[in-house]
Length: 87
Image (cartoon, rainbow, N blue to C red; front, side, top):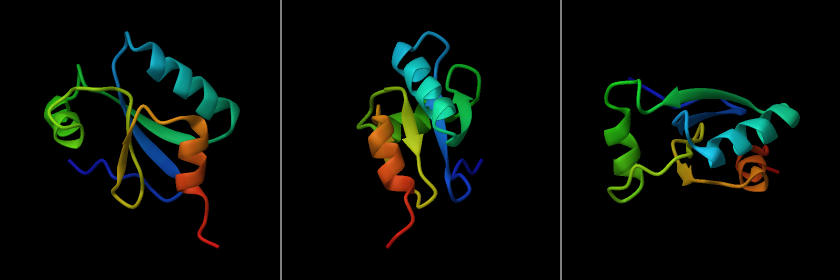
């Protein structure tokens, strides 16, 4: 599966019990940033994908950006900066 998001949005790998995931989702919603949530406990192959992005750790939230780069537990400011159009 291809999880790379469309321009201006992110893919966020989460779990249902992750407080950091809930916080980031709330901040994204409040700021109108679109995202696709992928629960790594429900979608086959995603725990391994997250591990490959995080040095073997299943750390969430892991965010995938349209350029194919990823960030682990990013702040709202980091997400906004990464999604900002190039000047």
